[in-house]
Amino acid sequence: MRRPSPSPNRRTARQRLLREALRCGGVAPRLLYETPAQALKWLAVHRRWSPAFAARGRRFYRAALEEIARAFPGATRVVSLGCGNGAKDLLLLRALRRLEGRVEYVPCDAGAELVARAASLCRKEAEGGCRPMVADLARVRILARRLAALPPSDGQRIVLFLGMLPSLGPTDARRILQAILHPGDALVVSANLLPPGTCAARRVMAQYDNRETRAWLLELPRALGWPSHAKALRFRWGRDPEWRGLRRIEGRYRAEGAPRLLLFASRRHTPTRLRAFLRTLDVRTTGLRLTEGRDEGIAWGIAACGVHSSGSGASGRR
Ligand SMILES: C[S@@+](CC[C@H](N)C(=O)[O-])C[C@H]1O[C@@H](n2cnc3c(N)ncnc32)[C@H](O)[C@@H]1O
Image (cartoon, rainbow, N blue to C red):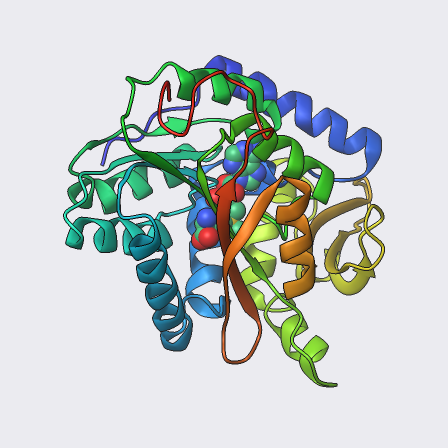
């Protein structure tokens, strides 16, 4: 697996984001995934705590992504924004290939280690080729230009935004998708949900307030030479300042000799909010599936005209 080493530009961007974090007290999500050590620690969290990784979650995603493949059998390009290790993308690519699709896979993520892993995992299912992109979604216009410069693809594009809504505020998420989506694209989003029931908040908290998640999140302060003992990070429930109805888990960092930071936030959506979010993008939801425990949801639809006026139609220049 070839891993691109961080370019001087990327190192400068990281330093800029760190300075910004110190100024505003909040950390951009990409700063938590970018280094190889962070990527490996996040993968350990994912394996141990993500409902999507557990057998039931995997069955759910396999069935949902197979349904999505059947809904868009003519797709020729899958663009995964924030691809992580590509494990969910693989399920979709496999299903499309079984339907005789010849699909090109474009995994995009800020973490070079993660992009390399996604490409290596999915390459053999992408008969149309694999074009990994290390990219910052906060600078989405640059990514949009890189995507537009790809050779034309004559079928439909599927844009994946899996697991991204929890870490992004609604405005940032909308801005990213508005810059990327073209009329006729299929959009697939997934999110962690807050299940109904009085014990749900406690169960969700247990997925964060644990050893593996602390080791992952404290990797950033550790690399900066700040204290990284377990007590420096406390988890609690809060509300999204932008969308007050949205509850979120917050990981607050506080240690002697270091700045106070909101190191991490993970929003909990509801099925209604997922649909509402797609509507704000002018994407008509055509499918919505929830896990049995209602702790994860995946929704998909087609971008209507007006999302992005590139002048190309549903296929055209991609
Ligand atoms: C919760 S993970 C989701 C991974 C995968 N899509 C999944 O569903 O398993 C969030 C991903 O978003 C990426 N990410 C966060 N901020 C980003 C940014 N500004 N630009 C690009 N990728 C970013 C992280 O590196 C990470 O891989």
